[in-house]
Image (cartoon, rainbow, N blue to C red; front, side):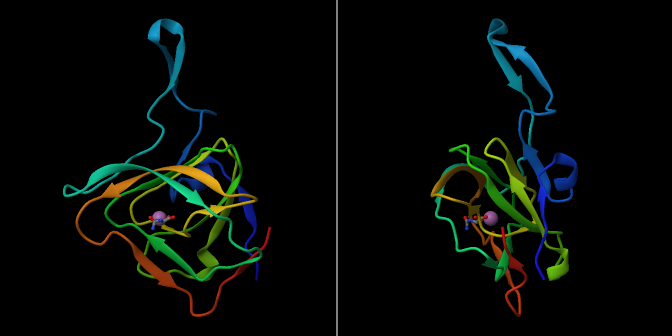
Length: 162
Ligand SMILES: NC(=O)N[C@@H](O)C(=O)O
Ligand code: NI
């Protein structure tokens, strides 16, 4: 069984987190009218013991069709990915919960102008670059304690083809 790949929209992604893009975003002029501020695009979450990190992930594309072996979640905070090379990439998520059913997996094609912010606890596949090594600005939670739960499927599920 293959997952269908959906276009990434705020509404479709709402159960999993935020879409970071200018389209449809609240915005207003600042800097004496020379700059548009696209305001409050994502809910950055961290626990009291953590702090917010700004990172860059340089991701190498995996082999496709992809055997989805695992998803992971970060219970202590959100994790945002913003593409820096204007290249599309894949987002693979599943609803919060203690286990993941393969049938609950959702795949989205993100454009090079769209970032995503996984809310704390959202199951997701590690970053899925396409076509070429791609850089992502990543905003997530740093600090003490384990903040990465992994869930492995009994069988690679499902084949994700492009
Ligand atoms: N492990 C790590 O920092 N990366 C993953 O969380 C990911 O979502 O790519
Ligand atoms: Ni992650």
